[in-house]
Length: 428
Image 1: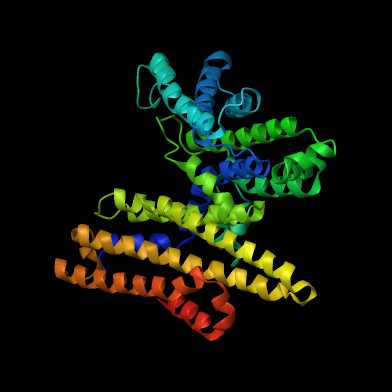
Image 2: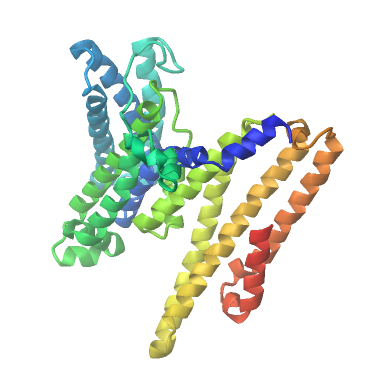
């Protein structure tokens, strides 16, 4: 293989790539947890994208001007973070005011917040810097601290691999994955979390036992804005030192889908965010090849669509399981249906990988020059042959897993066929 393509492959199968997954997962995971909290309270925060942009811009502005006011200080990035979090909470409360107090439509109010975040940050940035693109070279804002692991870990055989992954990660990444545990504890181990879930499931019943529904939903939106603001700050101060217009690039919208793929649970949302982070990281890595950049950039958004498909199918399975539970009573086999549900997720994930294979096929046909480094003296026809092979393999993946996605009860009736389909899919 030529050095270019070999470097891409070596980069994917490395500790550095895993570290990159954690880094790019951070701005997806934080707003996803915010979306989870608001969704469980019955007021999904559609304005996550705008909230992230407002917070990212506020962190840069306040930390940059803080340097002018107080000079260099270790507290400058934390000051920018604090102001960004304040504005994130206020933005969440603003959405609550529109919807809960003024009775505006929640979806339209969230879209208005997104427009406010996109257009407002550009307008203010132009007034301050004279630029409509970014603040780079004009505002000198600090970056959030990085966490350094103990040096002895890199000399220990097993720990050295994990040292390469977790060493020198931004504090925002550590906060993001710590937030998974914090949100889990909040939702399932505190009265506040119980109230949030009760209000989302049945607001009338919650109100009948004394829970203040409106105040609880305000709190959910404030927490959602807080977590989205953390994700926004990571975009502009986690590894970069400037704000760029619309720099969130749809991550706030991806975050709306992540809780559904994660089953409405903080831990599941964390794993789902890692899946999106994987697709985001691999699209960046593949983008270094000589192919149109728009093709690999499609991967995270196609993963989002697939996540919604998986959620719809899983919701249908859940309804079916509840019906069977009611009909069979004591004869209902909960462990059997639990295994069926987990296997159906496996089939859906394998089909998601197959869709990525189809994108690779389209990429090879549309830009064969970018793949000629796969072999020595390859011509376009060689790339086309392998593209056909990858496309056919992807179609086999989809075809073998689709029956178990559309009718999950078939997994129980055709166990060996399901196992064979999963095994062949994993091999392909």
